[in-house]
Length: 190
Image 1 (cartoon, helix red, strand yellow):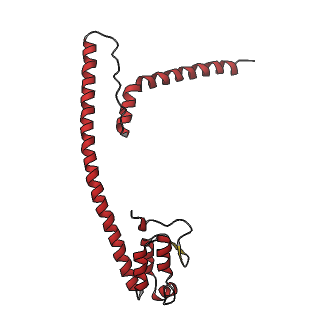
Image 2: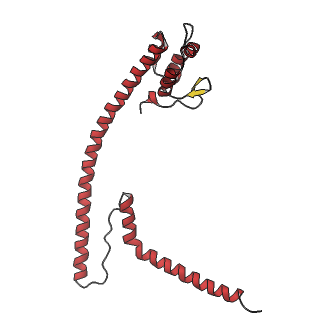
Image 3: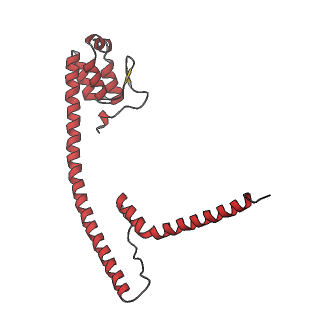
């Protein structure tokens, strides 16, 4: 988002009756919604509070100057629409550039995924060779932890599922034993 279109800091809002205007889009909406009489309360030949706010708080001099020259609410709306549209076009062109850069990053990540797949395939081949050679213990070849949520879950489940089951059984056994001991203590005839 362009800095001119962002919300202003708290306490710097434009007070339009009981409403607080925090950004240019909200100001444009309210300009379209207000009557000419309301507009004349904020903008006259003597003062232009809307332009002052845009100049001093939003710090968008070009728009503030355009609003000072505007002779009516309609001209102010048109000036704001043109300026906001140009800011959005600027953002869109920056996003297109960012998209192209992102696409190149994705291509690099695909190459890295392919290399990771090759490593895993090689890891399986080593494990199979050791198992076929009659070794009971097949060493775990460590690789970088996965980055995605789904890959992380699969990694944890495949590597720690036995440990989780073992801990669960130990906990259940201890719970059952503790329950039996406590029931003998508290249910003893007096």
